[in-house]
Figure: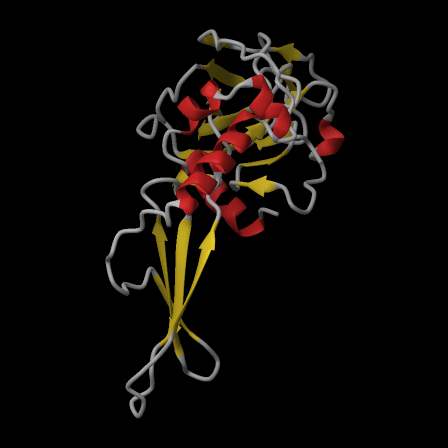
Length: 267
C-alpha cells in the first residue's frame, strides 16, 4: 500500500477537524436523492448531503411507510469524501509541514512546479490502446484491466498506470497532450466523448507508452494525484493532465456509437 500523499493527509486533517465541530450539514429536511422499490414492493429512499465545511457525505436512508403505518425511522451514516471533494484541499495540502506529513505516515517529497506545455507525441497504437505510466510501471499493471481499477468507459487506471482505449489502430495517433498547473477546461464542443479520472503518480516520472511504440517522457512532476481528462473525436484525441486531489471518475460526454458501445462492454 502506498503511503498517503499531501492531499490524502490534508483531507484527513480537514474532515477530522470539521467532525469535531459536528460538521456543517444544511437543514433541508428529508428530500430523497434516489428512490427504489425492492422485490416486496417496499419503497426505499436515500438522501446524500455534503458538509459545507469538509465534503463529508451524510447519508440518510428510510423506507416509505405503508398506508396503515404513520411513523417511520430514518438511519443516518457519514461517508468520508474523496480528497478532491474537500473544499480548500490544495491550500491546506500546500501548508502542511514535513513534520505533519511524517507523523501521518507520509513521505515529505518536494513540490515540483507544473510547467504548462502542449505535446504532440508520435504514439504508434496497436490493439487500440495506449498508456500513461509512472516510474518503472509497465502496461502489465493495467492490462488486462484488474479488479478494483477505477474506470470511465474510455480509460481505466490503477496507481501508476492508466490505459486509454482508441477507436482504431494508428501508425501515428492524432494525439495532443496538455499539461497544466490548473484545470484547462473540458473541450465539450470540439469532441464527441469526454471522460476523466484520477492518476496516482508515485514517482512523478510520467511517460506515454504503447505496444511497439517509443516511450514519450514528460517533464518531472510532483509525487501526488493528477486529474486526467480524455477527449475523443473521430480519430483525434486530446489528453489533459493537471494536479488534482483524488476524486471519482466522471463521464462528461458520450455521444459516439463507438463509445456508447463501450459503455455496455467496458470492464
